[in-house]
Length: 127
Figure 1 (cartoon, rainbow, N blue to C red):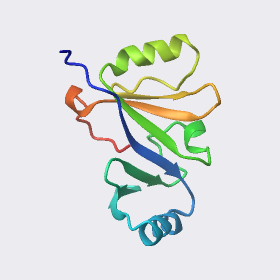
Figure 2 (figure 1 turned 135 degrees about the vertical axis):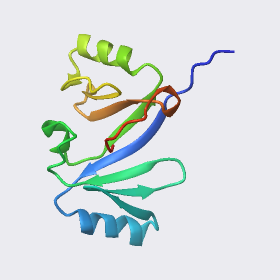
Figure 3 (figure 1 turned 30 degrees about the vertical axis):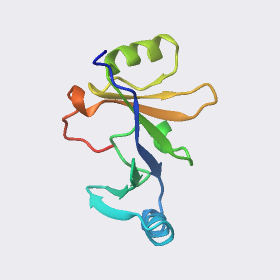
């Protein structure tokens, strides 16, 4: 049996200038629990986290945080190799950040890829 893990999903990010209203929507309508951490609010679900950021979040590439939809994150085992493949394919956005990076899929959606927790994801930034 292999030590490889299936990719995971999360967190899912949204950027808005109306963070308080957006958080209230998800807490009041969907019943999600909210926790403020730095410049973001983390919403808990059973199997993933939704993070609501202000539009000027400096840990996220400007073109990523400008999109109106959600940014889905995928936790993968070998994030450095995935970045190299994304860069070679011309779909990486910005630089490799050591344990995460952003990319655009063929339809133009921004996504994030981060190192699985079991593979050295301990860091001091939020996403």
